[in-house]
Amino acid sequence: MQLIFSLFPFLFLFNTQLNNADPVAVDKQGIKEDLPYLIPFYKKLHQMPEVSLQEKETSALLASELRKIGVTVTENVGNSYGIVGIFKNGEGPTILYRTDMDALPMAEKTGLPYASTKTYTTNGTTSGVMHSCGHDMHMTTWLGTARALVKMKDKWKGTLMLIGQPAEEIGAGAKALLEGGIYETFGVPNYAVGLHCSPTIPAGKVGYGKGYTMAASESVTITVYGIGAHGASPHMSVDPIVLSSMLIMELQTITSRSLKPIESAVVTVGSIHAGTASNIIPDEVKLGLTLRTFKEEVRTMIHKRITEICHGTAMAAGLPPEKYPKIEFSPVYIAANYNNELLVDKLSGSAKKSIGENMVVNAEVQMVAEDFSAYGRTSHKVPSVLFWLGTAPEERIKKNDLPGLHSPFYYPDPEKSLETGILVTSQSLLDLFTGK
Ligand SMILES: [Zn+2]
Ligand SMILES: [Zn+2]
Image (cartoon, rainbow, N blue to C red; front, side, top):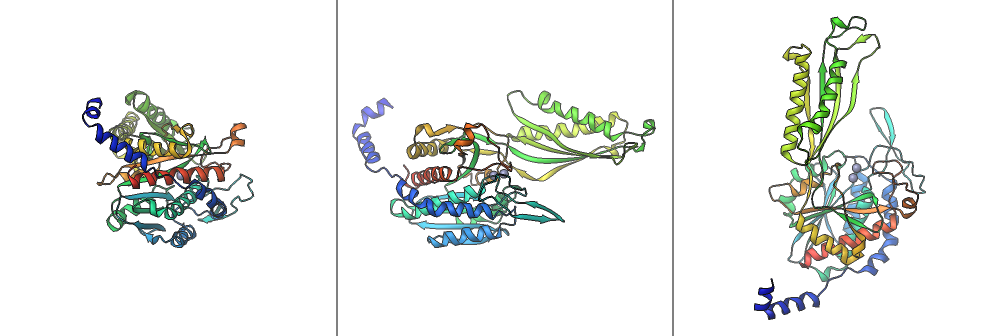
């Protein structure tokens, strides 16, 4: 480096002057002034949550807001309520910025004046509906950023690709849009960016992790067969409850004995259903598992061990091969999220520039999953980053009362989270558009 500088002093000087002469900064005042428009919008979204694949009103509202500022919107993308907004602003990079739109089937218990009172009925069961994963905050930040960038359009060149994604919570939305051909129809982006609310990072801060930041997620159903009998005649049975108990204990050894100690994975048996009465040995037990992994080879190993343990335990119980447990790996599978290292450096640099060095934190790796990962996993290998937007309200941090995502008590600090999210995302996109 030193040698290059001494050989080309003029070139170095020229570059430095060029970089310093043209710093593109977001219009902080303009963003602040837009909050009185955006906060009521956020509260409106919070009161109209829609569950996965039913985001009809939400997507229509986002589409109309984008059209108001001159964005070209295509609706019902990928046979869903997905929307793609394109704002073409001269020659330059294409940047994909995604928000998710869905809420969860659960009753809100925050007691906020703008709490959701909506209900949702399916198969005769009624539940509440709530934006307990903060997707309403994602949408409002997304709209606020689009509004800020459109206002500053003379300061950047390129194409802003705004994705309103359905069905994140069931891991189906990104897949639907990508299989619906968004890259083929609207162009392959140079970068993909997204954010997720963090329930523990204080509002006003953002967090970044490099490489694998969220796990791959999939579910497995195991049906354990046996031979039923009277509860008083266990010798006439092959008891699938005893078999399942052994199986559950043995499954714990996958992560403790088969997994390399420096790798991480989760194998959780989250549900077990069997039997009808205390004096009957049933002939079937159903187990529901969730698996979390980062690397494909770890995932393959876990699948193999589950199969071996199931077959081995059934064989030891004396069951014939046709009565070995049936193992069903779910077709819905969310890949691990990988944050491109260079892009993290760039975006966290932009964040520091917009909200200050001490407001940007390193985020821990989490075993939760996010289908945002899919945008960077096509053959185009688009560099992508999903960062954390701090949302924890100050009064809750003081009381150490920080409910997690999907809790009926979770809520973000609307104003602070929103302003931070828009400042950071606008500056990040601006820097990517202008190559700063
Ligand atoms: Zn969620
Ligand atoms: Zn979420």
